[in-house]
Length: 136
Image (cartoon, rainbow, N blue to C red; front, side, top):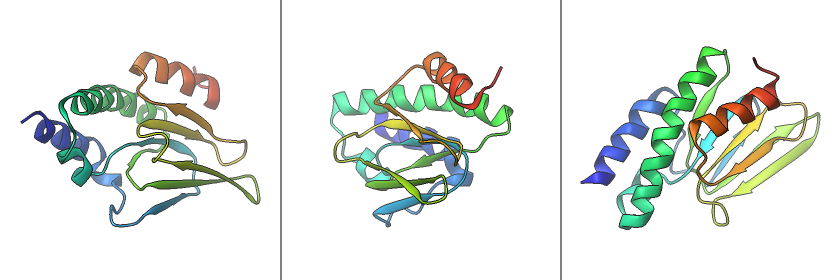
C-alpha cells in the first residue's frame, strides 16, 4: 500500500534523527531545519487524500534534506504533537500539530524561527533556507 512506501521513505530519510514518537512535546535547541508531520502510527491510518499529501511532503522533504545537509545544517523529522523551539536567551516558539499537520521550521537559535506551513516544493523550501540562513 502507498502508506507503507511513504513510511519507508520517511524512515530512510530521517532514520538517524527520528524523534521518539511516544513523547507529546519535542524541545528543539539547536540550529537546523525541522520538518514535522504525522508519526509512523498516524501515517498508517491516513485516508487516500491525506496519504497523497504525505507522499508529496516526503518527496520534497527528501530532496530538501540533501540540500540542507550538504550545507552543514541539521535536518530532522519531528512527529510530536507539540514542538517548542528555543531561540535567543529565553524565548520559546511553539507549533502545535493540531492546527498545522505538516510543515517546516527553520531556526538558527538566535532570531525568531520561521514556520513554513503545509507542503512546499523542494525549490520553495531551498529558497526559504537560503534566505533564512544566508546561504548561497
